Structure formats: structure tokens, C-alpha cells
Image 1 (cartoon, rainbow, N blue to C red):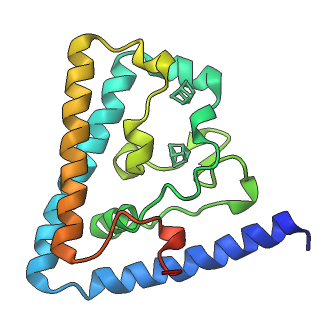
Image 2 (image 1 turned 90 degrees about the vertical axis):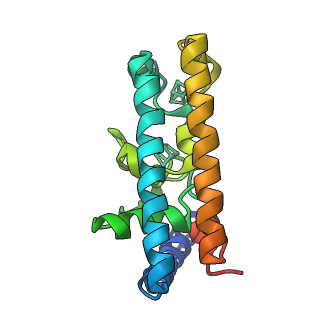
Length: 176
Ligand code: SF4
Ligand code: SF4
């Protein structure tokens, strides 16, 4: 097995271990905390959806398609523990990564990102390259900044009520 193969086999094992640990944490949250966290996750999903829809409405789709996802390279640490909890809260099966795709993002395929907009990592939904930013009007920029701030606040509150850093990278979450 060469080094590249060893790395993606190791990442796959880490992913499975961290996924099981996250399922366990989520299932064992005290009832009051679980209800509050679920409410925040709903809000987080809504804000992520809004951010993605905003740039699509401004015309980003063609530019991103032509680019092929330069900003999605090396995305394997982008998915957080909280991102997986959004799948669990929604009763949806978490995504299946492909770590052999490195340096392409393991959460993408030939069609692009395999995650629905509402589940995408925060890093992915708040970043726009200059080409995409240039499409946004001053009002759209202002709205996007507002959504981003609300999103960061909601993620921070989710961490506070659970008493854990839920925004840490899923792949690193079992190492500390
Ligand atoms: S945001 Fe920019 S870098 Fe990322 S996929 Fe779109 S055009 Fe490419
Ligand atoms: S998770 Fe999706 S949006 Fe984020 S870097 Fe990977 S392919 Fe791109």
C-alpha cells in the first residue's frame, strides 16, 4: 500500500470512528439541551441555505461550474461534528466521503458538492472568491454579512449549550 492509499484508509477509519462517537454524543444529550440544540441546528440549516441561495441568485452557478471548484480543494477538515448532527437531527443518512479523491474534496464528486446546501460546512457557505463577490450588489453583500454573523453566533451558542466545541473538524474530533 503506498502512502496516498494509507492516508485515505486512515481517514476512512477516522471518519467512521468519529461518526460513531458523534451519534453517541447526540443520542445522549440531556432532553433540555437536545431540544435547544435542535432549534439551533434548524436555524443553522436555514442560514446556510439562505447564503447559498443568495450567491446563486446573483449568478454564481455558471462561474463556479466553469471553475470546477478551486476553493473546494483540500476540504477534508471542513465537515464539523455539528454538521453531522444536522444530518442526525433531520433523520438523514450522513454523507459518504471518498478520501481517495485527494486533493479534490472527499465530499464532492464529478457533479460537485454532494452535500445539500443546508448541510454544507460553514467554511464552504461563507466563502466566496473575488469573482463571485463581484456579482453581489452592496445590498446583497450586506445581507450575506448579516447571515454570516447570525450563523457564527448560532454555532457559538450550540457549543455553549452542549459544553463542547461542536465546530471542531469531525476527522480530528477523536484525536483530542
Ligand atoms: S467560489 Fe470561486 S473558487 Fe469557488 S468554485 Fe466558485 S468560482 Fe471557483
Ligand atoms: S464540502 Fe462541498 S462545498 Fe465544501 S469544500 Fe467540499 S465540495 Fe466544496
